[in-house]
Image (cartoon, rainbow, N blue to C red; front, side, top):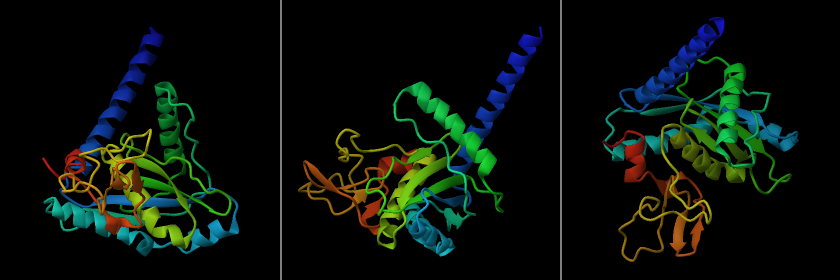
Length: 255
């Protein structure tokens, strides 16, 4: 009897959480007001260079992300004057759980739950309360040349973004953060995970260009600028990216 009651209570809690997540996502992508995005910096290493970089961050450090996405939203017909606001939150000292190396579905689901619990425990309070939370893990490029894979989760509307703590990488950091931000809103990757090459047509900024290659910009969820059938370049900054039609539909900018 009591076991059945506990199971029923657990199911009700899970249903409540699922409904809350669905409602939050639906409300965020209705674009009837400003989407509040908060970014929380974390030092991924003990480097003094990483510490100095984080200490120099302020709200204006992330203005280019909001400005570019707002311009893209307007281009797709979103009528809200400022659809996205990005605000810097407090630095967080405790690192989130690491993404599993194995790609199994159970491992990914467990990590997602662990990450959401970590976020609930460690995210500082803010006003207004953010709808999307991005945790920016900064790494000293002198200590590592390759970054771990970043993740943006639609469930929970949060992302873990690995970035370089180097002013020479700041504009490319913006591209990575904007990519993961759109993931939290329901945008899908539009590149081949085996090659990293954007998929045609959805991963191309101008899929009907003649000749098709080289492209001069990247579709933000395609990730790179296709320059030949076998090569694509990382955009230097957000000005070399745009949000394509399929992505715009996925995040509610187009119906």
